[in-house]
Length: 309
Image (cartoon, rainbow, N blue to C red; front, side, top):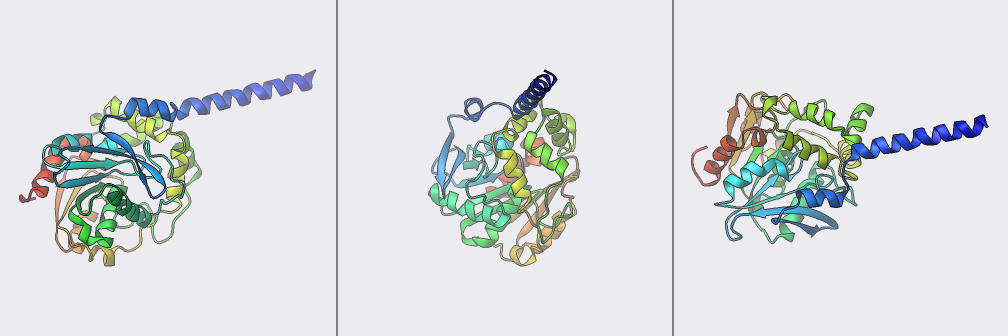
């Protein structure tokens, strides 16, 4: 009888653990699609993956592609899209292993693989040449793409981009610590809020709505495991040779309060990229395009339309 009782207790504990984990994981993918897909969204088949793409603005306007950062999604660009879509064909997408795109069947998570995937995406959308803007990991993808495919980039905007080594990431990838793996795979909302506040120069600017969006997308089925796999492929080797290959006029935007990738990288990148200039926002953090969309988008628009940066 005691054995049976013990088995029942273990089964109940197991059931509670499963319930707790499932509750952290958030709504199913179809529920997320119902909540976040818009009339401007569609899935595009790109090199064996189904990628969520959002396009706004005139179809015949100059294209601008916006690339979000690690654990984020295309929603980070809402303010920029609103500001730019009157004059540009604004294209943004959820990276492989992120947002509603979800994990890549082929696990193409290394930075150069992501840059090459951008070329595949542009081909699928019928875009030969575009201006590219990227934040954080998206900035890494953007500058690598601009160096690898210089003829396909009109102008380049790098926002707190991963360019030089940071967080002890160097030539070789390193395994994510156990605590980080747990956070990335479960993404409890309290932890998401705490981590996201650290990316803002002024944490009070983070809205409840934006924090919920980030948490929901992180908890999308398969994304947590994809984040962990991404870390296992992420490297930051010396970029000097590649940066020298960039021919597009480049605007570097950086938050002066960025604690993740410190702003001293901005002048280094300005010196290394042949035609580059820098704007530093003393009061902003790691995601300036999100924290103060109006100010940063205005600077981007001036640059993209040919005015002085």
